[in-house]
Amino acid sequence: MPPAYERELYFKYGTLEVGGNTEYHPHEWHHVRKAFDSGEFEVKFAVARSGMTEAEFAARCTAIESAARKPFQDLVVKQGTATLLSLKHSTNTALNTQPEIEKPGGELDTGRSRLYVFRLSYDLPADNAPTVGLRESGVAVKYLPSRRRHVTITGVWTANSGSDAMTAYDAGIAAYSTAALTALTGTYDKIEEDADHDYENKIVNFRQLYKERVADEGSSGTLNATNIKDQVLTMRRREEGPGDYVAEVEQVNRLVMLDVRYDCWIDKTLSTDLRGEWENIRGWVVEQVNALLAGGAVAITLEDFDENVDDNKFTVNLVCLGLSGGGMITNAVSIATQIDFGRVRVGIWDSEPISKYEYQGHATVMRSISQRFRVGSFLTEKQAAKHLLPPGTQGRPHLAPLGGTGSWSEESRVIRTSPLKIGVSDFGDPFFITDVEIDATYEYVKLKRSGAHSASSTGTGAGGRQVPRAITR
Image (cartoon, rainbow, N blue to C red; front, side, top):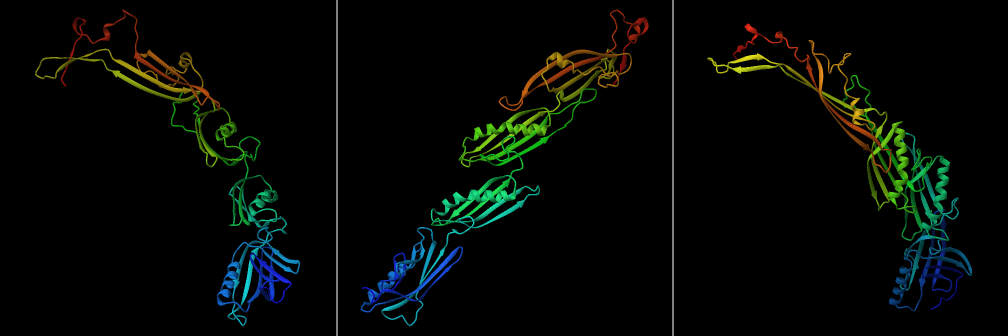
């Protein structure tokens, strides 16, 4: 049934219509509030019609209350043919419209009439902001002890008349972040990004984390590679000196041990070939290892490549050996001396079963010298023999005279050489070394020419016969 008269003022929210030629009449004045980020609308209207049954009136009230609590609808307010307000969730002139209806109670409430208060709260698009769509933002700078900076950019992005919030964010955030980082100066690598939109994709809350780049990334002269993210390169240099034989021989230069760990993420929009990316980076990593060694050859003895295909990242551990000087790398010498005093004993029959004659035979003094060393080059056996310990002259103790008129005589010598190539052939700078083992045997002896024996060399009795000496032990 049409109203008794028609009003110029007309409100429509979703399927709820008030004023105009409807049966529901605005009461008093409507209220509008708008701020930068949100707004409110409120109107009172009366439901009054005679001739309705109780059931018809109840059904009409139920329909009004149901329509007035449905969210995400459009609100239009007209004065005749002129539109006073157009707050449309559907076209992003109002965002996330949230209705509320109240029956405050009062004189207008009867068995066939009722006064309602309809309220609508809503967010507004940031269409008049310096950066369209950016409702609010913040830039936080964290300084590490080294003064390297971590920058966090946060904010809220809204939908606009042409796109939803996430699309608008994707289109505008790069320019805004670049401007914010440019103001700080420096070069930065985006490490993390969170962008959370609401149910209707009208509001995006975002956070971006950037780390300042202070070293090259993946190649020389590239401070911020587009495909590499959050690179971490750590290197450890170790030098050990467990003990080497250094008396009277050349200087020993131990191999330098270098432990390297490289981590990075790869932008999946640019590449998913993790192994290929590492092969492009490896040469640069070896350059950094060479710089840490500060001269010499670096051989990679172990490469441990660990890839995470789901996160498109990889970790590589390298074990490297650096040859910084060449020459002797390790040197160990052991000396063993064995003395046979030359006593000869023959049993005799007397009252003691353990009685023996003792004769002085020829004493023997033997010395074994073992050398185990590694040289930073390829050696033949002839070349290795040049490293044999020289005779014990000029204060050299290993073959020093033991006294008397004797001297050391070399009896045997065994030389073993084991040439080795250190390092993986495909990359790095492999080098050759030689493991050498020299075992030499010497006897301390007084040498005489054949036929030059003297009777004085043995104990003699009458007639020059050797006289045994009885002993009891």
